[in-house]
Every structure is written in structure tokens, then in C-alpha cells.
Length: 295
Image (cartoon, rainbow, N blue to C red; front, side, top):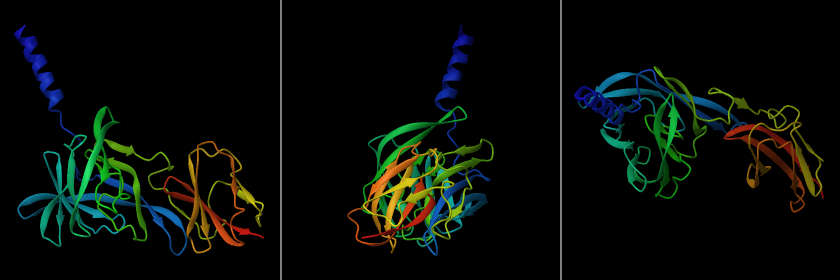
């Protein structure tokens, strides 16, 4: 009986104290989408990889090479009991970046190393993500500082922000996008964005007729009071459409559910001129087409 009790106690201890997802092991790689606005709209990807280890101020740190948005490279981080610290070169000191221990209702004071200021983040809820039988905590967050709402909505245990790993300037070109995949040297690849066909998907629209679902079209063109966007076949994923002015200003947006084959659009209120319809899948630009609005 004592042996059975001891065995159960060991199993319980292992279950409660089982190691969490290791932060930034050497060889780990993050794949992020990017959005390019100039000279032509398009999408691509970028990576951040842990290339080795070094020491700063007597602290062993991981060396991360690569960039997303305006993030500088290399970056130096270390983790201590679920809290990740980032070396801020301008201050020559480490600042708290993530805290994977937080629960719903807790507040994190993360650090924006671009503007050199603390940013309060509220953990609204905590969900889990299954990876190879291991449940990773996902902190669903809300930025409490104005202007940061578009910089990511989740912090994934052992992986980091679902936007760029490091904070970015939204005005960067290319703009840093959402995380697509995370690759662990031991656990393999974790696909985090099902809206793109691969971790390394790229697309550039050099002309307004390039890209998008094969054979997609807009008619009538020149347009009257209404146009039809026809994809030729049901789209496999949800699509995001934007009506743009000739200067690239967004005038109206539409969300289309998966399996949409065509959609009507009332343009009767637009003045005559040149416009564009942009089709996105997630953050990826599939294609851009020109329309002419008649009188």
C-alpha cells in the first residue's frame, strides 16, 4: 500500500510540476506574415530564429536573429520561472516582456522597446492550445494604452505574441503581420494560422489583375449602381474585401464567409472615377482589381 501511495504521489508531483513549453530553445523559429504596400501591394513572410546563446551583464541569454516590422536584430532574451525578459539596448538593461503565469484579470506591464515605455496589458481570459498532447496557455489580452490595439491579441505560452514577437511601429513597410507557424527543434512545426496555405506563403500583386483566386472577376466594368465580385468557384476560406479609392484610401469593407462564390456590392453612391477592389485571406492580399465607376 505504501508503495502504491508513493507511486501515486510521484505521478501527481510530475503532473503538477511537469515542465512548460521551453522559451526560445536554440534552433526555434517563428514565421510571421508581412504586408507590403509599396511599390505594389503584396504579402510575404519573415522569420525570427534562435541562433545561439551568449551572456549579458552576467546573465545567460538567447540570441534571436531576424526581424518582424521595425523590430531590431539581434534580440537578446531570457526566461525565469515563466517570465520572459528582453534586453533593451538603449537602456542597457533587461525589461519584462511576457509573463506566462498570469491569469484572467491580471495586468502585465510589458515594455515597448521602440518608444521606450511600459505598456499595460489586461489578461481578459486564458484558454489552452493543444500541441502534441501538451496544453499551452493562451492569454487573450487587451492593451490598455491607446494606439496598441492592433499589435496582437494573444500571448501563447512558450511562443509569445500572435503578432510580431517584438513590438513594431504600425507605419513600417513591410508591416509585420500575424504569426503563421512556430518551429521547435524537438517538437516540430506548429501551424497557427489556417488562413494561409503554408508558413512561407508569398504573393505580390505587381498589377491590379494579378493574383487572387484563378479566374476571379468583377462585372460590369465600367460599373453602374452595382457590381458583382465573382470568384468562379466557392472560396475555401473567409475573405475580406476592401473598396479603395484611386489613392489607396479604404472606403468600405466586407467580410465574406467560407464557400462564398460571388457577392454583390452597391456602388451607386460613389462619384464617377477609378477605384480598386482588394481581396484578402486573413492578412494575406490575394488580389487587387481596378474598376471604373461610370455616371
